[in-house]
Amino acid sequence: MAESSKQGGTLQALAWVSADALKRELQRRVNCIVEDADYSIEDTDEAMHCLSALKDLKLRPTPPPEYLCSLSRQLMKDPVVLASGWTYDRPFIERWFKIGNRTCPETKEVLSNLDLIPNLLMRELIALWCKEHGIELPGPPLDKDQGIITEADRDRFNSLLQILSSNDDVPEKIKAAKQVRMLTKQFPSLRAFFEEDSIAVTKLLDPLMSGNVNDHPKLQEDLITTVMNISIHDANKKLIATNPVVIPLLVESLTFGTLETRSNSAAALCALSLLESNKCIIMKAGALEPLVKLLDEGPLLAMKDAAAAIYSLSLVKENRAIAVFEGAIKVIMKKITDRILIDKMLVLLAMLSSYDKAIEQMIKLDAISCLLSIIKEDTSDNSKENCIAILHTLCYNDRTRLQEMWRDESVNGTIANLALNGTTRAKRKAKEIVERIDKYFSGAQTS
Image 1 (cartoon, rainbow, N blue to C red):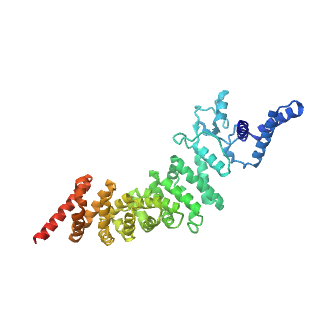
Image 2: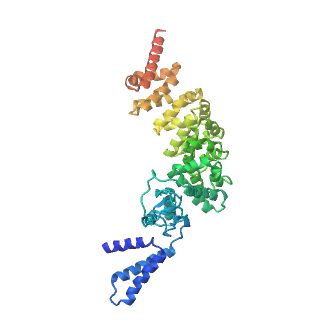
Image 3: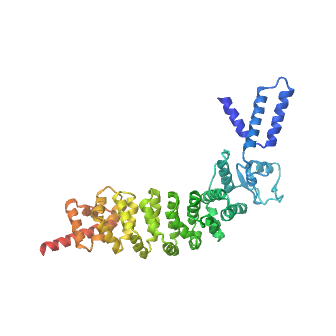
């Protein structure tokens, strides 16, 4: 077993040696075998290992030249950037410096310093290429808190956008979209690339601008997710939302696409809507209808993203009427009744309850008994607080609704208990309702 492990380790090491080095080692071992009658078993084993590694090299796909270290001509395992901006594999450039060199091997210029900065973007690209081709690349773990993005990296990133905007080869576009999605997730500094290049977003989404948006679902998913990634960057929010192609594509992708695409479209719209001026643009594109639909139909994560987007847009009071018109109350009440995302749904319902039509719909959907049942349950303080706030809005000035609450209160004392044991806000709202009920019924008894 130990011998097998040793051979495996030797083969793995040889796999990253150049073909010329393997041939020289093979020649040396064969010479020992041919010329020495008393050759060792080790010589034959190593010769076989060299042949096996040469075969692997022959079968292995050729890496892009930029992934190779110019010193070793091998795939870089730990790429680092010099002061000159050139990238090398760490062990080989360290050896270059160790023998007394103080220049960049490519440019021959004297370096201002010998700092080696991890090139994380290059490392990720190489790792992705290896994964796609079934190759295991040994190397150090990534530390996302270190490293820089060089001009060469920016050029490489722009080349991916060029593929998306000008290449008719769909498989190449799919591959480029996957890389852009991964890179904008892993490297926050790359998100700023879109701030610096005003047409970068248009290049990114070019594949979705002709034909149906979901002709290639995986391509659509990666591009929409990239928009979500870059929307997190505050300086991008206005640039993205004011680009005439982005918001319509996000809204369309809320309806047509994989569940992940729809969820990430909602998340992108939520991020963009944090900028007040963007809310109007998103609303004009008709985002609320598909957001409500996603809230109704989606799995848990998609529901969370849709709820967050609806909440953010509904911070503008005028938008609450549109959310109610699009059926938000019915969907939210159904989720609350089914005890799905109760905290988030109650926050949303509390906001929408400031609109009269929302109150009418809630009454028809038996909201009072539903909300009272949640208060009775062992739910969170936030949930109880939002429940009593909604009940306060529903019932405070309506005797008929107060009477419904009084019937429950006379049996269970739910609101009186909350007036004693709730949060500060919950106590205040509950106390006002109890006082109102007492006043109404004491008045009724004396009349």
